[in-house]
Length: 239
Image (cartoon, rainbow, N blue to C red; front, side, top):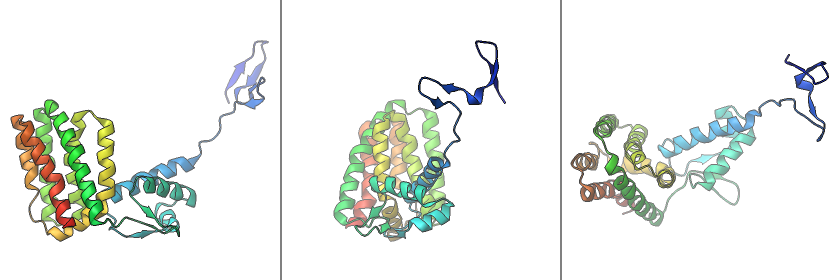
């Protein structure tokens, strides 16, 4: 037990010290585990949705989430509330929770957003695209190819987004990157559906063009390659 010598020479227990002006005890309170549980559920569920681990239109329940993550209803409810606000989950008037089923118009809108935001991020990253970054992107693209060969949709989406995020971090534009990630989050389940429809057997050709443009310092070529990469597949899904 920690002890403190008072001004009058008496030794007192520090845990019992009070602020006499307010009457409030200064004894440390235990940390409430609920916020920690909520954050853990939110982050893990957000990652699963973004990477297409949950298909579009999949129903979720607070009871099911609580059981899966071994938490009470409160952190499960708070996690769902945040994800609904980000557009990652939908909630009906009756309270039914599910991953969104996007209309063709919504897919077109999100594709246009990706073209605007990600092209600008890539352009801003170009002056800081050193050789180590290019090598890192090449290594990630190898993992993308491996996921394609194994027909692993979730690994493909995860490594594909890792490729883009690694490049965009060099833009040093955190607000813009956060906007891009919100679009990825809303698109995650739909991207999984797209992967199954395309029957992809080769990694995205535009990744190689992005790397080549970075190596050459070719900004127009980079902008074109990124725009093509982020919109082509989505518009095929909407067609």
